[in-house]
Length: 277
Image 1 (cartoon, rainbow, N blue to C red):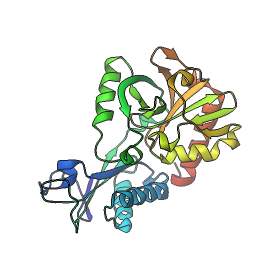
Image 2 (cartoon, rainbow, N blue to C red; image 1 turned 135 degrees about the vertical axis):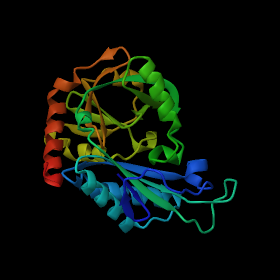
Image 3 (cartoon, rainbow, N blue to C red; image 1 turned 90 degrees about the vertical axis):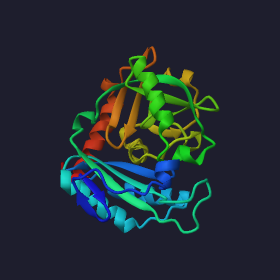
Image 4 (cartoon, one colour; image 1 turned 90 degrees about the horizontal axis):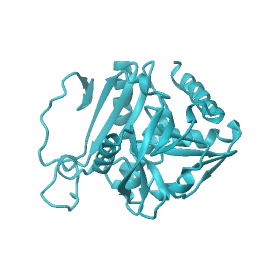
């Protein structure tokens, strides 16, 4: 199911401005969220981040239109993945930002994908670096080629997904999610300044850490330190919390770790509270 020009449609093909900067320059952003029982999980957090990111890029956004699209898509599929995309709209050739942009907002909903929730995954390092000095490293922009190529390399190594280090040599994130490590009674996740997206589930984990018996910390750590962790997991809006079974040759028993299970139980509770399912 799709959302375009203010209404739902089953047709994926529509006339499109071939000068659209999202198409020609990747000048835009997107947001992915989870629909359960016709409701968007952490809806307000997603809309707030979408609006904040649009403002950071200077792309006008009518947040009520985004909310309308998100809710309509969720109701149309009940359970599945939602995506909103915002481009700056058409423009003349070159990099100069139009004085009066006419942004384009559209959305898509894909049923199912529930099998991703809480499923374990393995990670592999990549030679591609996350550029922590780039504002785009902290926004879900349309330029995802680094993640695509890094994941291709990881899958060639037999892993499910790539893990990025940044240009300073610190672990930053997975290709499609935030990273956490448990060290005894301490929970560590990379700092946003390391080139990290402020994930909606990341925020939930940090808020709930103390209730789970862990002391949360945002820290810049090299890969060698991450490999010493008791458990590692990835969070994003569709997987929610994915225990990590390995980073390269280092194996982890993350799926059975008691703190990981506590977090999963907490997320289940939050999902029921938000979506009733």
